[in-house]
Length: 392
Image (cartoon, rainbow, N blue to C red):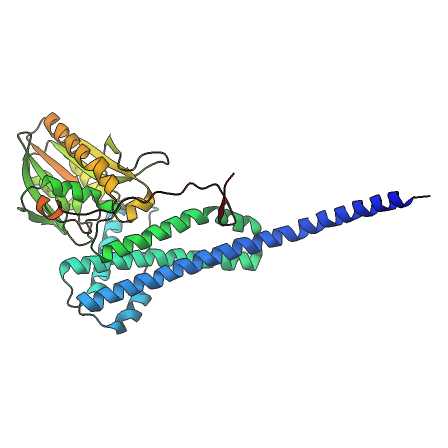
């Protein structure tokens, strides 16, 4: 016969088993609830960013472009703009198809910019186009988040929820950086991707240049006893320019001994922002057409291709350009360019400053007094658990 102590022990064991089973049943639902709640918060944050970016664009159009607040609806409708990639089953001619679509898309952006800001200058219109592109990017992030939230709610798929949850910190950082970049472009300030055009502008000592291709200027300078043709997107508006066309034209008309490209490049975690790396090839991050033109021009005439990239994170590339990146890269890159020109066998060299030229003028006089933001120190964080940082 069981005594009272045996009965209590058995009751405790049964209660423990019941609690464990309850935990196994309820914890996944609790975990799913917490993950969906965090995703909802991030989705609302990005949607607020989209509204804010539309507000910024609309305000800029009204105050400086002679626009009308009634055009806000047109901006909101345009946020769903998309490009359908061409057929690539037969790869022959694919680059021409891509270039054609990109050019027509650019024409559409410029038409919308003229419509919502009819009195805008060429520089302001370029900034409005960049703001529209940034707003479309934020809107796509918000729509994708809403899509996955709805899908997870519908299926109760905790595996899918956890996969997306692991990427939330990166999505949050990119959305924050994109918003800061939009604010910088609206104020006509340089972003991280502007480092290439900034270095090119420092090489152009006098404001004596010509527009050699669409939104691309060319200045002839002397360096180490050789002729150097410095190319960059036409500033100070947020333009990229048809750099491939400009390089091709110079290669057809001049006796080029080397092509040097300078661009921002993504760093690995642990690398120092602003570090300059040297390599071979065309450092230009376009979808393909402009890079292909540079490579084909070099291949046709056996011209060496040298590249210098300034390392930065994806957030730094789309955020306002910081003082430490400029300090770490500007002088060193110019020294490396001089050394490369000195080594060149021919007497003519092309130097291309690749990137978005937002807030960056076309010569040294226009960029020498630029002020850059100081980098904010990142707080050391522990493990990420349900969106909150917990230290070990």
